[in-house]
Image (cartoon, rainbow, N blue to C red; front, side, top):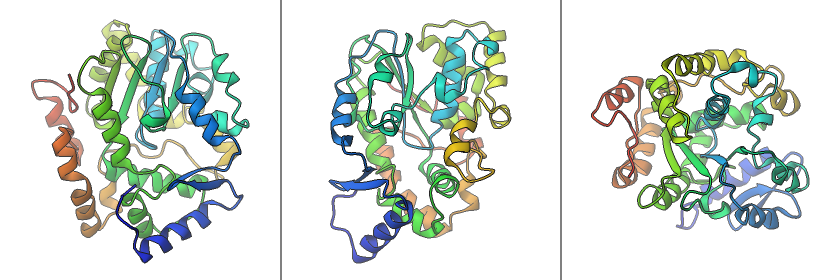
Amino acid sequence: MNSKPMSNEQIERRAKYIAAINVNNYYIEHHGHILPNKPSIIEWHQTVKDTTIRPTDIWISGYMKSGNTWLSEIVSLIMADGVVDRVSNRSISERVPNIMLAVHVDCNYSWFEGLTDPRITVNHLSTKYLPRFEGKEGKMIYIMRNPKDVCVSLYHFHHMMIASIDWHDFCQLFLNGDTIGGDWLSHVTDFWLAYSTGNHPNVLFVAYEELIADSAAMIATIGRFLGKHMTGETVANIATHCSLSEMRDNPAANMSDVMTRYGKPGAQFVRKGTIGDWRRHMTDAESALFDERYGQRLQALGLPVCDDLAAAERCMRAATGRIINHV
C-alpha cells in the first residue's frame, strides 16, 4: 500500500469497494490491510509464519491471479512423474491446498500439519506472513505476472466470486494497493529482495509469460528444480495436460469444486490466460498509469515485464532462455 496520505477520492473509492465485497461482513481492515473477519486471523498469520518447513515441502507463492493454480497443476503432475492417472481423481484444491483454507475452518491449522509428505501448498501471502526458506529446507516457487494482466484477471475474479465493481474504479484500487490482494509491487519486491540473490538454491522465480511462451522448457526447468529429471516424452505429456485449454475443460484442474460452492452460476476459474488481455480493457491513459507506477521500479529490480507474446518469446530466445534471471 502507498505510504503517502490517501486523497478524499481514494478514501471514498476504497470505502465503496469494501462495502461491495463485504456483503456478509467477511472482511475487516487491519493496519491498512483488508483481511478475513475471523477472531483469530492475526494469531493465524503468526502460526503460519512459525511453521516448521519440512525438507520435502513445496510452497507455491505469488500475488493473486498470477498463474498460481496453473503452476500448482504443473507441480502436482511433475511430482506424480507425469502420470495423469495419479492426479485425475482429486481436484487441484485437494492436491495443492491453499494455506488460506485454514481461515475458512476457524483458523484450525492442524489439517496442514497432518498432510502427508511431500506437502505441496499454494498461497498469496506476503513474505512477512511466511516462514523463511533458508538453506535446503523445503522449496518455494514464486510466480509473477505482468501487473496489467493481473489487474484484469483479478477484476474478473471479483465479478465471478465477490461483487460487480466498475472497471475504471478497480484499476485505481489496484494501483493504490487497495484490493484484497494488497499492493502488487510490494508483494513482488519483497520476495525478490529476500530471495533473488545470495544462497537460496531452494527458491525459484517463474514468470507467467515464460510458461506461455515455452511451456515445455519451463516444465523441464521446474522439474529439475524439484529433483525430477524427466524425459522429453514426460515433459510433453505434462505440457499437453496442463495447457490452458485442457485446464479449462478439466473440472479437477479448473477449481470446479470451489467455483460451485462460492462462485456465480457458470463461473470459470481458468478464464483466458493469455498475455496482453489488458489491451481489451485499459485505456491508453490507464496503461500509462501502470507504466508510471511500476515501470522504473521493476527495471531497477532487474525484472522485465512482457506486454505481449512476441516480447515473451524474444526473451525466451535470448542467451539465458528465461525472462526472469536470478542468481
